[in-house]
Length: 61
Image (cartoon, rainbow, N blue to C red; front, side, top):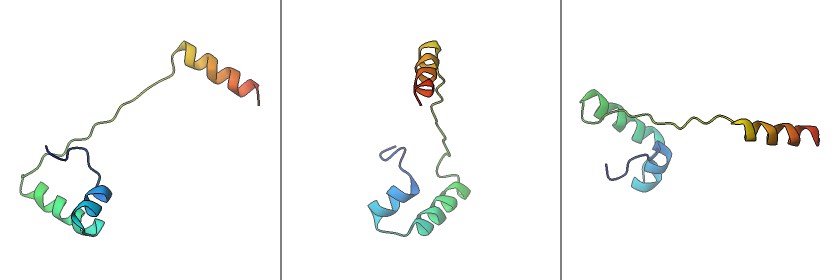
């Protein structure tokens, strides 16, 4: 996709519409099966080194 990963807020600014208008268009495109809904997120967790750093930071307070 040309503008993949763009939020409704960014898209609204880009096309000069209100966020509500962009979301309505988005819902219509979903209903027409013209777009795929893709949610990606990156999950992270502290490793041993990160836990040590967090522990040290907490003990300094």
